[in-house]
Structure formats: C-alpha cells, structure tokens
Figure 1: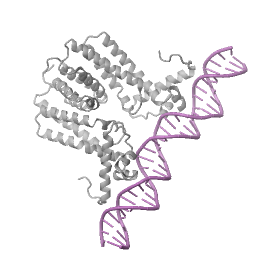
Figure 2: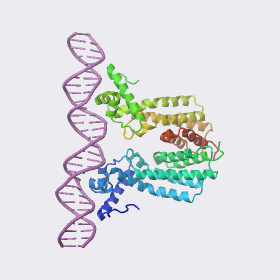
Figure 3: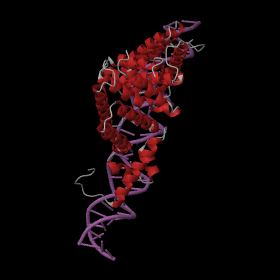
Figure 4: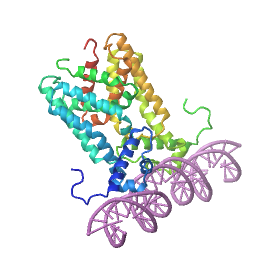
Length: 190
Length: 190
DNA sequence: TGACAACTGGAATCCTCATTCCATATATTT
DNA sequence: AAATATATGGAATGAGGATTCCAGTTGTCA
C-alpha cells in the first residue's frame, strides 16, 4: 500500500529512510529547533544527500514525518466515528485531539511555507470525521440546532488546534475548554 | 512620546519612513505575499537601503507596522474595560477582536520567527484586558465560577485568534463562536 | 567470490534574503 | 547660493540552507 510496484529499495536505503524519518520527527518535537536538512542529517547520523534522496526533497520528508505522527489520531477518529455513540464520541475525540495537539504543539510552529500533501489530506480527514460526528449528534438532538453544523465543526476544529501551545503550560486547560464548549453546545440553551 | 530627544529627521526621511510603514502594512495584508525587504522597498518606491535604514532592520519595521495595526483595537479594549459593563463589555470586545482578526488574518501567517517587541507588548495588553474583564464578570456572578479565570481568558484569547482564517471564508462564524462560548460560560450551567 | 547496480558522504553549487557601503543627491542652515 | 550634514539608490557582501554531483562504498545476485 505504501510503495506499489517500484524496484525494491536496497536494505541500507530502507534503514536510512527510517532513520531520517525518526530524526525529522525528533527535531519536529523540539520547539525552537532548526529544521534544516543538515540538522536532520546530523541527527540521523548520515550525509545530507542521503536524507534528501530518501524522500526526494525536504518537504516530502517532513510531510511523511508529520503524516506518520498524525496517522494514529486519524485512525482513532475513524474508530470513534464508526462505533458512533453520538455526542460522547465527539467529546471523547475532542479530548484525544487536544491531548494530541498538546503533546505535539511544537510541530505546527515549524511547518509554515512547506508543501505537505499527505499531511493536508489527513488533516482534511480529521475535519471530515468531526463534521460527521457533529451531524450525527445533531440528528440525535444532542446539540443545539440553531447553529450551522459547519460552524460548529469549525469551532471545534479551530479550538482543538488553538489549544496546543497554551495547554502545554497548563494541562488542565483542555478540560476547561471542552467543558465550556460542550455546555455551550447543548440544545435549548438559548 | 514616540521619538524623544533625537536629532530631528530630515523631511524626506520622515516621508519615507511613513511610506515604508504603509508598504509593509499593505504587503502584510496580502496573504501569500513575500514579505522581503526588497518587496517592501519596491512597493514603497524606494531603495532597499532606505527601507532598512528607516527603522534599523526588517524586524523593527514589521514590528512598527503590526503595532500600528494593533493600536486601535487595544485602545478600544481599554475603553471597554474602563466603562466596564461586565459581561456585555467582554462580549462586545470579543466581537471586535474577532472582527479585527478576520480582517487581518493574513498578517499573523507571516510573522513566524520575527522578533517583535512592540507587537508583543500590545498582545500582552490585549490578554491583560480580557483577563480583567473576565475577573470583573466573575465577581458580578455573570460567568460560571467552576473554571479558573486564567483558563477562561486563555480560551477566549486562543479562540479569538483561531477564528481568523476560518471566519474569512464564513463571516457568520464569529457570531456562532461567541454564542456557543458565552452560553457555555453562563453560571450554573453544570 | 566477482560483477554490477544501488547507495552514500559531504563538498560544491545555487538561491533567497537581510544588511552594509558609498558615490551621488537632497535638505537645511547661514 | 554656498557649505554642510543627511539621506538615497541599489550594487556588493555575507549568511543560511536546499539541492546536486560524483568518487568511493556497499548490498545483491549469480
């Protein structure tokens, strides 16, 4: 599923690919780090050329690293959506999303200007998952119906991302956010 | 108050300073623009050196431009805080903050990595203003008391900034955000 | 093990920018 | 208007970083 019908990579190339990815992830996690190809190469213990070649360019490497990071939370979202328990699923997912963002808040700081297709796709799926949950919760009458679902989805999505840095200083923040948000989303609250 | 006891600038220097500032503001407002000194200089119709010299460096120029942009909203915040009508002031200020952010959403995209002391100070004052209003509203019993004021301030602040890009696509979004947020902040809502 | 294709390190290259410099031009002052 | 202090344009400089190149190395296959 990942690399279809290409000539198989040599064993050392596979190894280095993996190492480059890990090094990128590590640097991504460190706020204030210089995310240069050279820095990644040094961290991975290999030459610059090797790093670039492994993915065909810096952006592709970062894209792969971030996508790999995002994968589990997206998967988790799919699960929650499928066995959909309505509002509770949504609340649970928001909690996990925020925890995820808090844990990786340094990442998004360093992504400006990069072209990250895979990452973008996953992010879009995240939004889509939340939108689906919002729709279902609303059909069940669990959230207010005087506000457009799209607006609610946007509110949740933006808030989930916004919390990142702040909640890293104050872990309890996420709970406060969720409490206020979901209280405000209850039906007949106007 | 702005330039104390320095030797007065020559008339043309004053003019160029102004033009550089305006050019920077213009470019800042355009999403996707390259915010290089050369671009600013070209836009302002002057040489690169002139632009840099006017403020002593790129960062200082951008800082001045953004601070100038922020000034009115901060001033407005001070007014609202002084004639404090409690929760209504807070709600009004949030509305204005969000409108402001929506209008200038492109700005913050381009500020990563720059050192902007004046801008930072104004932002801090914005937070301080919101914190003050939250405190007052809480003392008046207008918002729930089961969540730390600091958390509420953070929630409002982060949300206000988060809305920027999204609400540029969908103007009604800000209202939805505020409705949900303030409903969720009502006392005895738990 | 030998032959060969696939990889590797990291120096060289190429870009994008901020900042500096200085010969030239313009304001200011007398 | 002449003298002087300031300011200007924009080429030159230099730093930071992505990408390319290739001589040398290592995995792979027979």
